[in-house]
Length: 81
Image (cartoon, rainbow, N blue to C red; front, side):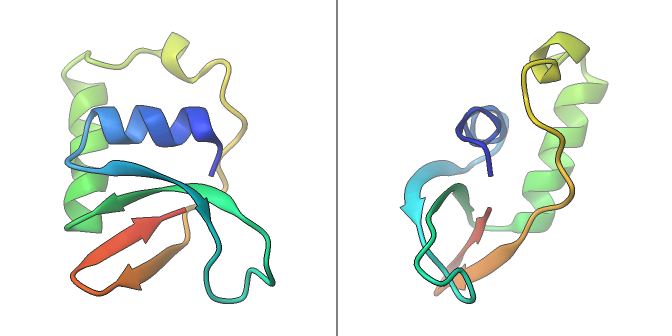
């Protein structure tokens, strides 16, 4: 996940940015992710922020295209990356 997108997602959810994450199947490559308690709620929070006007098109203009998130369990939390 792009670091700017991670910051944006964390700003509208209960998440925290995790830099340098290397998970299953990443073969040592690292990325930035967002650690959340409930990934479904995090996506709902993101959509709600758009619907409420907290985020606008301009907030996404400088971000690279998103072709989906991957996620991994981190025990009691999940990282979206």
